[in-house]
Length: 220
Image 1 (tube, helix red, strand yellow):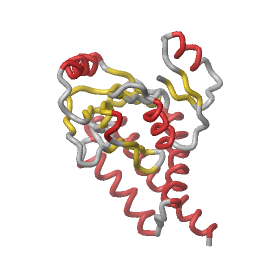
Image 2 (cartoon, one colour):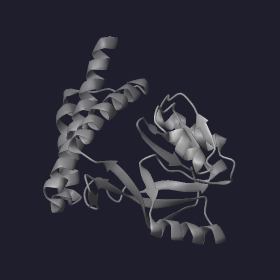
Image 3 (cartoon, one colour):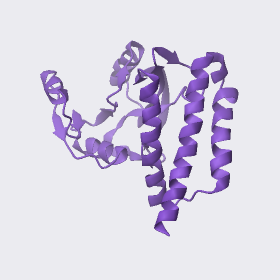
Image 4 (tube, one colour):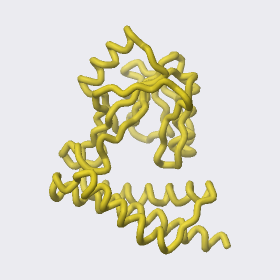
């Protein structure tokens, strides 16, 4: 099943050619769209993937095993991102564990847009040693554009949830984000790629709080 927000490309044609049930729904947010998909699913067990994700061969093999021996409410997989042709297995992007295989009636999508997460409160969750392949950015320009886009979405979602921004957030949060990813999580081992990724993450954090501060001021 594919839930689409009125794409203007050949998404529908391609999906239906592969036998997918195709649903169109106006996009109101990542969380809202995914919860709609969950409710529309007809099977008791759901595997959820974004449009830029794919099942790795090892992940497929593990899912085949689980089909014969399902003994949890949900299963977590690592997500490995491909950044401009490089698989990233260091820094703040890895292992990026995601609960993506679950019993449909057990939980729901939560979080703060655009960063959604599936939660099963009190559920029996197990981790599987296999990766979701995440094809994120093919060029640096795409990454930079996404930083601007996501920071705007995040700021609006934070404001809606009553969160506030201060000068301290603008200084401390980006600095900590960069230090945690580049130093503590080892992105420095990736060289220039690691620096670009963590610098971008820190900048997105800065933009998010700056835009939230601007929204606060405009609402006063």
